[in-house]
Length: 435
Image 1 (cartoon, rainbow, N blue to C red):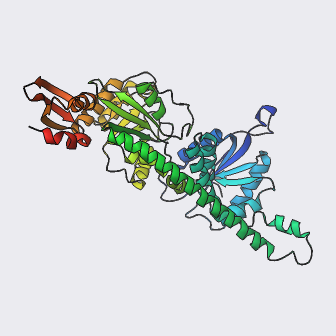
Image 2 (cartoon, rainbow, N blue to C red):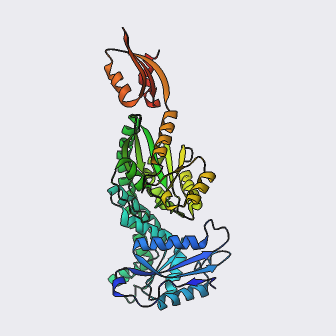
Image 3 (cartoon, rainbow, N blue to C red):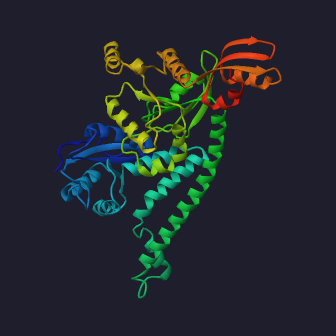
């Protein structure tokens, strides 16, 4: 049975709460968990709130392994059903992903109108709420259909028997037939969405190639959801990107130019936030968006310094970076929200992570030092070259001033002599004039 049970809100729903669903959260404490169960459930509660549900009760069970039929024990499933009735809940959310059969069996235990979903379905629902661009909406729809496909268990089989009018000849075969129709419909939908996403990915790739061809140093902001990536981009570039204290407030990547103090232009790209137990379907669906990270020269790994789980969040982000093949890109660990720390807490972090940056997008604290570290990283990739540019190639001199760092410049009889520091992308253009 349950190790503990915490009822957060009891009693009938008030008129002010009728617009939001009432949810019971369920967690299972088992060996090998990377996050403390309490912390994971606290995050699940925040996810539920973001999706528009009020948590009315939280219940847990300690198990050596999930029950193959109902994930929790049979007695626990009945206890959850009773908890739902007592709190007039209409939604049960499990902190782990349920198999299609587990979800089906649990729904049979609950009252008729009670929905049973898992963490994956909840995250997909939040993504659907927050997707704004066409590509973002398609990516979410793809992930939703991939999640739905194995869960088509004759969900609309009753429609076939209704068309038949019931009775003899309608009590067998139709369910399976309708299930196959449903599956084919979802397969076709997945294929269509993938085709459209591939077209949009080609457009994104062209845009990305244009940026790459510019020779600009590319910085990607990656991190756990709600770490403050969008706020940091706004602080640096006045990008006016949506920035709320909500999980997954922004899903679409945003790229802005930024001029470093020495005059060099770079690009900064805000990307979708990560989370523990991030559904693999979302990683696949958002592949083209996440490729913005893979194409970066530097990753700012933004961390919420005020979170008690920041170390686990760092691990979760690094796991996803590994999944998309971005683990080898140089990264700067950037602790944000440092204004929420005491002086002692901040000094402790500095001691533990001496190579990290410590900033506050809210107050501007540490931003100058962060920008300086980005400048050093950009300079480290540059190649030094002395060139003699003939006067008839004024275009190369203009390119040198706009895209390279001009260390010295002198005018001789045969042309302009420049000492340059340049991005690798421009070496081939200046190499023929190297002295």
